[in-house]
Amino acid sequence: MWRREYGAVLGWFLFSGITDGIDGWVARSWNARTKLGAMLDPIGDKLLLSGSFVVLALDGAMERWLATLVIGRDLAILLFAAGMLLAKKKAEFPPSWWGKCSTVAQICYILALIGHLGGFLPAVLPEIGKWFVLAFLAISSVDYARQGKRMIN
Image (spheres, rainbow, N blue to C red):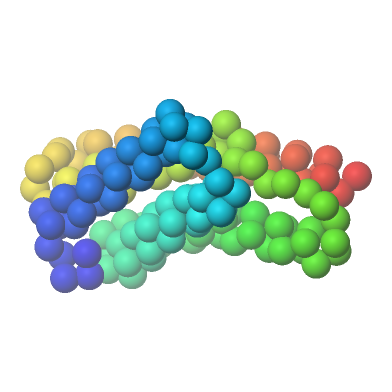
């Protein structure tokens, strides 16, 4: 991505997404879910997405404010979870439906942006995707804040 080889990046990004989907499907279908897998899967997703947002923002391929908002929300969630653990409050942090929608919007946006930068897709697709990212980011942020308030109380 840093070298702007967007065709290869698009291929690897699609490969990562497809194998992640297959992994989840196999775990559910064969009842092979584990606590470790449930913890590592979203971490892997966030590392891939956050890394993509950082590199594309630093390279000037996307607006830095968008990457800042996306990564800032994820850091806020992570800091809240760490605070709850340090306070020794027993709490689970399952992803919300809105959080999953936000992740899907981010994946679609990155795919559309990489596809556009590689010359495969029109510019309108990442522009539309950016607004979906913002909408789901706002909704999921409010939802997580509401859940966090409930956990504290």
